[in-house]
Image 1 (cartoon, rainbow, N blue to C red):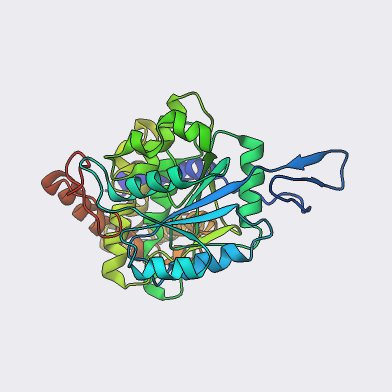
Image 2: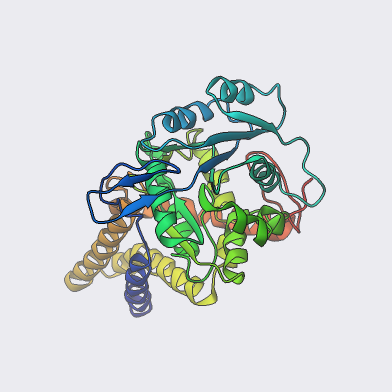
Length: 378
C-alpha cells in the first residue's frame, strides 16, 4: 500500500508543477496616461489609442453586490464609454441602484426557450452596447482603479478574446475551503491555447462578437463562458485567459458553507467534463496524489517506523508547499494550503454531489436560474 501511495504522490506532485506552470497572470503594464478614443503620449517614441469600451453587467438578483462594482467603475483611471446593467425586470432593486449610479438599465425579461438566463442577459446587453469593445463583468466583481485601463491595453496587445479570472477575496475562514474548487477551475480553463474561457470578466471586439454569434452560439450551455471561448477559437481568433490578481477581485461565497459547496459545484460543473483529456488526466493524477499524501498516514500508523514517518512528512510538506504556491495566484488563501486535507475533503464531497446532480438529475444554474439536460432553460 505504501508503494502504491508513493507512486501516486510523486506522479501527482509532478503533474502539479505542470499545472502550476500553466497559470498566467495579467501583468500590469508600464504606467502612462491613456484616454478612450484619443491618442496619449506614453513617454516613449510612440502613441496609443484605445477604442471606446462598453461594460455589460448581467445582474440577476444582485442588489447587494452591484453597488460595489459600479462604484469601482466610477473611479477608473480610464472610464468606460457606457455601463449597461441587464436585469430581470425594470422594477428590480438592482435596476434602481444601477440607474442611480449612472448606468443604462436593460430589462432582459423571460429567457426564450433554449436559452440559459445569463447568456440571454449578455446577448441583450451586447445588442444595446455602442462601444467598439465589449467588457462583460459579473455583478459580484470589483475592479482596481486601473483595472479597465489594463484590460483595454491587454486587449489592444493580444486582440481576439480575453478572459480574466478574478482574485478570490475572502473574509471568513470557511471561504478558504474553496481552495481546490478555485484551482480546478483555473487548471481546467487554462491559458486559452485549447479554447475555453473564464466567465466573470470577458473582453472582445463588438464586431467579432457578433460575427462569431456571441452568446447566441452558446445559448443553451450552462457554462457559457467556457464554450464561448471555444467558439472564438474555432473561428480562428486568439483566446487568452489570465488570472486577475491586482486587477479584479470577487468575494465568491459570502453566504456560508452551503452556498460555497453549491456555488463551487456549479462553477466547475461543465468545465471539468469539457476540458481536454490530457489536462483532465493531469488534474486527476494531481488530486489522486494529494489524497495519497493524506491517506498514506493510515499505512504509516500501522507500521510507524522512523523512515516511513520521515518520508510521509516530507511527502505531505511537498504537497502543502506546492498548493500554497498555487493558491497565491488564486486568492488570499493565506496558509490554507498547509492544511490542504480540509479543503480537499470538501472538494471530494462536493464532487460526489456534482456527479449525482449531473448524471442523475442533469441540472445546472446561474444565480438561481435553471437549465435542463441540454442546457434548456426551465
